[in-house]
Image (cartoon, rainbow, N blue to C red; front, side, top):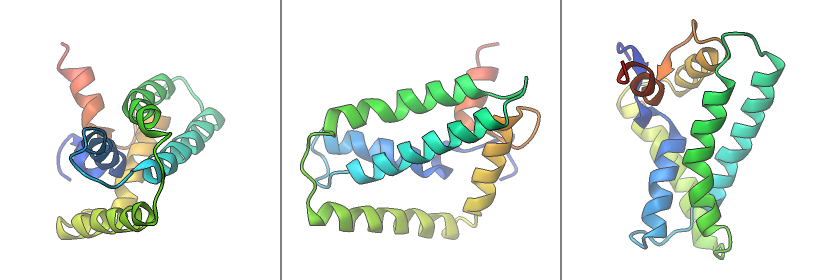
Length: 140
């Protein structure tokens, strides 16, 4: 990770959102509702952490807006879909594939999230996400 930003592909929530839309368009059969609920719960926990550590350099609104725009639409489109046993198995396999991918490309998952969390808590620390980089620096 020698870039100025952390690539979006390093975040499992991006994987889940992409997969969710592929499910919505009936390209893939397994319901990602479990995965979406987990990442939304983690997002809520992160928001609480951000609020507890809020300062003038905190990117609270950016965090809330991007996460809401990414995760809420697919959740609202599939929340009534039935969950089958195969969906649970798929969710576990999905996470395993993510972990294996990160191992193959030799990226430490904990470091990715720690750097991003540090950046959200104080935009002068940590490492920004690719999304923030393009929002902030491509509009100049």
